[in-house]
Structures are given as structure tokens and as C-alpha cells.
Length: 114
Image (cartoon, rainbow, N blue to C red; front, side, top):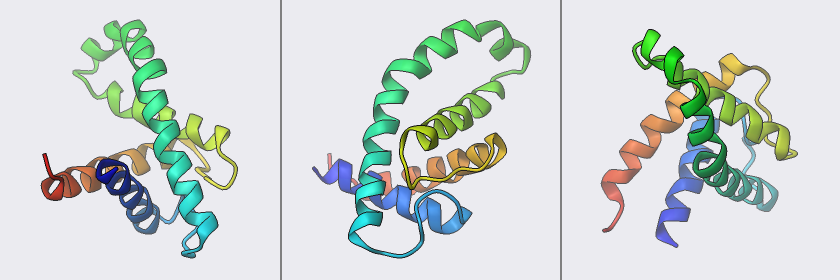
């Protein structure tokens, strides 16, 4: 449960920093959207992303791994299409959101209990 709460906090902080994603007003609806984003991103990252990564192995090698950043942005953009209220206007904003989300998750991981 603690893990999910940290991920919800990560989505909220990332939305605040990037000014996209979950609305910046703290309401029950905002927390619900952040919870849905957390669950949908977990599902996407464990099902679709590995398949897409395997298909894009040649591009991954050619770009020395930088293509994985755009795959992450595409997964964020896909989540925004699936969740009403989670708004990512473009793949570049999804790219920016995924970078900030990775940094916030890394910082919050320091506080996570094992």
C-alpha cells in the first residue's frame, strides 16, 4: 500500500512541476485521477512497453538507448488517452513528464521502506 501512495504522490508532484497531467487543484477527483494514472501506467509498463521495446531494439541500439525516453513519453501519452482528466497535450510533453516522473520516483524511492 505504501508503494502505491508514493507513486500517487509522484504523479501529483510531477503534474505540479510540469504543469500538465493531473489538474493542480487538490480534490478527491484529483486524487482519483492520480490513482488511476498510477494503476494504468503500471499496467502499460508491464504489458505494452516490453513488447514495444523488443520491436524497437534496432532503433534502441542505433540511438544508444535514447529512444527509450521517447517510448516512455509515448506510454505517458497512451495513458492520457485512456484516462479522462489526465491531459498530456503532445508526445514532447509526455517525454518531459516521463523524465520528471522518473526523477521524482527516484527521490521518493529513498523514503520507501523495504
